[in-house]
Length: 138
Image (cartoon, rainbow, N blue to C red; front, side, top):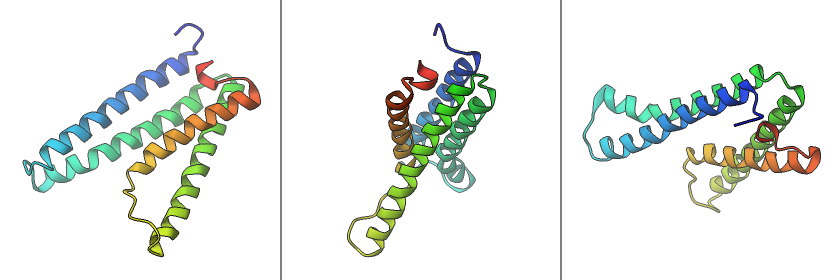
């Protein structure tokens, strides 16, 4: 990790923790909820846990933007997030109207998160093309 800022190293550790919780929550949900092994408040807890881990990931990204002292890297990160958000919202709106008119099947909303992170990667490609930098992953 040579050359990475302290903010970038903290971001990597925090995001790894959030994604580990996310993956563990999905695995636990598949096993416990789909297997009918939990009910009541525990059912709600395990159903909400993956979404809360995603909320933590969004918070981690926000912390990174606040903590990063390199204004250029911060700008690229915000640019990536805006590209990801724009692509995700556009997809959601288009798919929603197509679904509303019976032209496509239902899209499970938890996939929006995957789409957003994919868009964040597209944002990195755009940053590389425009600014010659991958942002925090110089």
